[in-house]
Image (tube, rainbow, N blue to C red):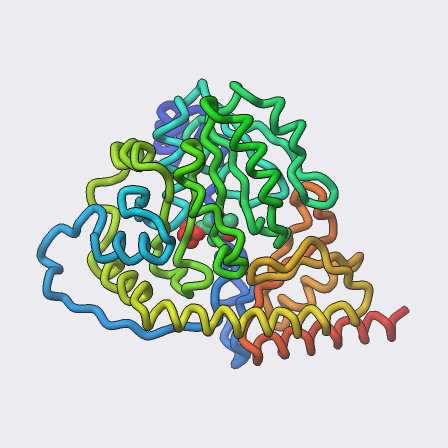
Length: 373
Ligand SMILES: *Cc1c(COP(=O)(O)O)cnc(C)c1O
């Protein structure tokens, strides 16, 4: 039976899908270790989630109705927060869906390409591969700035240029002059997508107030990080009204479940925004403390910058350290397979308590190492 299904799938499956593997979310990577039942609670510092879980209320009053495609309660509140017009905004199932919609609307499968700048967020490439869209790469310079000359050499060869700022996983911001050069060079040629998933941790560097100035500028935002709502699946695409109109042609008719819209509207209320600001400040403080302690430990070298809610570091003992942390149910993210990030691990800033637990474990790891050598 399974052999028959297998050969049917082989016969039918799209050529570009054949080679893909299902997405390994940060949590799924460790699902097995979560199952065993000893008392120790796992600590998840591997997916750049917020340590805060805020409370919301949901009314079932309209659950019998199909929801609005673009609920105005959410659109109006986010447009106000971002300082743009509601015609320049699209809400979707996470920023990830924004990435997918951009690729589906602006890249013809089997023909067009996107440009990415590794090391960077993995979903640009994954979405392109899934859609049978090509990928060109202009790796970041050693200091993680954009390699402008290489990027420029792809003019008229790519339809979308993805720039992540602050960049995941390096935590670096891209200099405004660099983004400006890319926008100008690709004017009339490609859309430049600035992924601002972490912008609330580097608020003064948003490009949202430049939409009028550059008609090929697209910005991605999310409620998953600073707003502490990764479980909600709610993100935003900011661009001029005609780009938004084009994305609305390819989005599902009912992408925003009614409970999601209700919760997003609460998160974007005055009270929700002030909660977010307070929590961002607390995370920034914790990040500084974590950094100060980390640099004193073992052979740890900080890598990149701290413009988001995570810290990247390098250690020659990355595999032993990772194994040690996993055996204590402390989960951080291995980034060592990314371009130029050999031996690098990424820590999401957690609660004060979680960060202390992590530091204690790292410290005892290096003590054990020291005793052995
Ligand atoms: C987390 C993240 C996203 C995805 O956000 P969702 O809204 O949860 O889909 C997009 N870009 C970057 C750089 C991220 O780190």
